[in-house]
Length: 406
Length: 227
Image 1 (cartoon, rainbow over the protein chains, first blue to last red):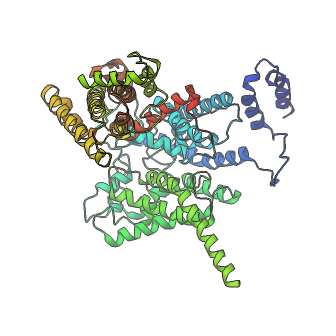
Image 2 (cartoon, rainbow over the protein chains, first blue to last red):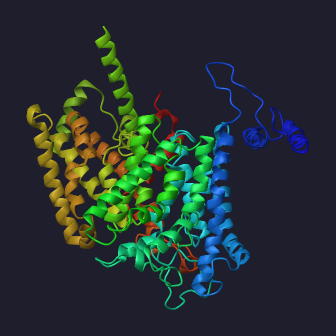
Image 3 (cartoon, rainbow over the protein chains, first blue to last red):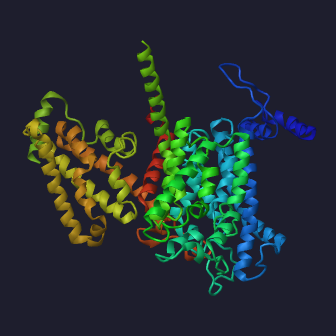
């Protein structure tokens, strides 16, 4: 630690007033506070003393995403080996799969951080404000919601779009209306649909080996949508090798652990729940939003079950919730403290509607296989409105009480 | 043009006649390009700016149509401004603009049928373009024909350059072409480049207009509101 401290202390004069790199002081400050607790304290107004600051908060969220990321790497490798028919067993070739996945996934993470932080630093230095911490989380969220086959330049374009249009134009971290990571995903989804949806993008392909005969990389979601009316999806579902899972229980088992095709970090309910546990235990993620989101999705699934007009509607509610990005959206996207509702009551409403709408969009509109993304973005926009009415209702309730007393 | 001459003569008694391109008249031409741009500052005519900027060709034709309608409308209204009863002036303006739009529509159908097809309802909707009604109401009704024409040209040009700028961005990144000519080489596509589908959708037009407004305000700080 002393070693790091010395480096910063030696560099400091260069960045302070009159130094060679005076202009870049804010960049230096960002790096220093990233490593050490900042020395300055608030001097006026009410403030809370706490060991945790925004940078630590953001970092804990990143830690919460690590299980999903690691699992995503393994799964990327696993899906690849399944599709070529080698090492098909779950326990086989753990290291091979991890390395294969890391080669595919890590460049996406690096590009996302490099582009996003680059823009953040540039804007902070230009406008002479401190670098915002928010991108630490967004930079990890973006890779996790993308298919592993996404071209890197698309990641760069989408990241730039999300940081500039989704965040900086509103005033930076804390002022954004939309969740930046979801903005990036939505941008890619509409801009390059052939790389973001369909059957070809979920399973890594060796270049020059594309198009292995008779193999399909359909996600469970698209299988569920395509299942003929009257059949039960759970028993028909198959994996990347074309092998049927056999029964609903087996399909659910695979979805829970996550060895199914899908976006990098979204497939494993287990890894996501580990992250959820970290978020809830440290009090960073709102358990109210997660719970109401879950209840909302469950309610809509049960309504569709009762309706049962096609086989997608009759998918078992638990299976419905474990497919696609429902869980990931619930734990990491909807709980974003900036774009979610702020009031306690507002959080319940916000979470419930996001889950409810997510399943509704997913089932009703096959053009948007990822209804969760749309639903959360939509509720992001509505969150201030919800908060407004919650606050108004609270004021009215207390006014009424005051009048009765008088 | 006889009325103009007569009027000019009548005014000459009161004040010295001003040259055709006096400072004030030049301002009529240049102001709408930047300081009071109809789209980026007054935020009028947004609807058509979003709808017909997918291709540069459509944007150019649309701009020319608006230019024609505006010059005609401003001139006619300015000529008859003293005999329009103020109670029914909106109706009169509408009739004038509508007739001109029908004329333009017929010309487009006759000479550039494919573009006219692509513009579809938006040619007819020039009637409701707020910029035109706004200029008639705010300028032509109170000014002489020559300044009115200049005002029309200025505002149409202000509308046009935004429209074409947006269309250039959208066509280049959305379809890889400009005015229908392929600009992005096949080699780029083979290397993995793809056209941005979102550019073809209206939301991206709105964002592009927003970015133009952003750039404009960062250059022209007088436009930034105190807040």
